[in-house]
Length: 268
Length: 235
Picture 1 (tube, rainbow over the protein chains, first blue to last red):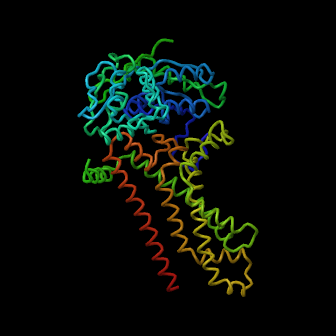
Picture 2: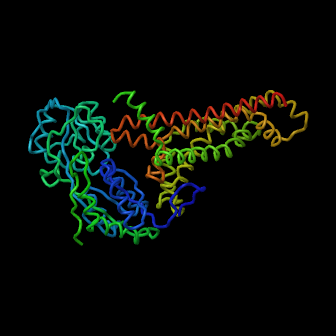
Picture 3: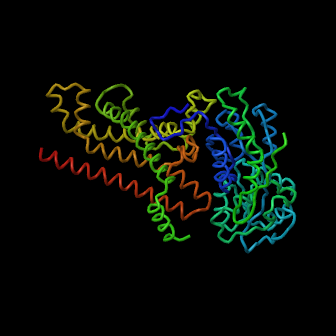
């Protein structure tokens, strides 16, 4: 129900509200695939962009129909608690560690992200964390755990939390000549690299090193918990996104000449 | 990124004038102006009444209204968000992530500015004309109405101050609107989004467009006031 004073708002009942991570929006993926879905089905998808943690909370409160997120542990917890009706794999992407071209911590070309982080900690160069409970933040914390470190608790002077989205964080990283973990899609589409380069990892999601894999899932919010939700339209979106057309749209998405996403959906 | 590059981005945005930009500008103006209109409907009589009526706790109300001029947009956004969320007390209305939610948040932000400035203007006028109004045996309500009408040109400036607050803020509309493309994306939230994508020239270009719109609206108000003032002087 949209009670508005004659404002230019799409008033058709068939509007789906999708919560999506900043990475899928900032990279331009949604801007490319949602119009294709609209043409195929006549359904309109409205996108609210936040980190995965915030998106999952908006699912709990019933403010979103669908959640496109990348925090597998958080997703499983959400499903176990009964907030979701259905979860499917959508696509795989990957993370990379970026830093200033001077590379003061000498991590360029390291094959293992965990040893790279350890080296950054030892040399005490700035590392900017998202610090916002996003999927990327969760992945970063898992890497620190693998390194046997907990800078988010110890708060050393070289570890800073931006509390912002991926792009906003990269602006800070560029400004400070620091290091950061970023998803490859946002990195490829990012316009203000200012001397930053990829230090660890490559652009192909299929070749992600352990710890740098970045799988995305889509969740249908439970309409038993939230009876106002229109799950028919939302289900059609999931079917489309994980079906042949959606998979082709994801596989065909190109940023800076690279394919940052590989479709993984399709299985029931 | 140079400043010149942003200027040319802004010029390109205005010259190219694509439909998306037009939509964002129209929605921004609709939300901001509706919020200011609602704030004036509440704030003008409220400010006038607090200026002239004598009641217990009047000082406290005056201080509270003055203080609320400094309401942080993010806090207002958060409170409106919690109220309008499906799990909140007003969740059944389904207003979260709609333009109406943004209008509600901005009305809350702008009303104290309108009320506080109106109260001051009417209180000052009362010092000047109070005795005269009393000698005409005007009631308090009638006095409020008369003084509001007399102060109408000053009150346009009050409305413009409110518009300035509404058109410049991003914290509240970002939270309650969700910055949804083609639905709740405004000028300020677009600028925040483009900045987060690292498109700094485009973001600054949008900023320059926003500033030009604010400037045009203030110019329009200035000339309307000047013309009306001129006519009034020779009436």
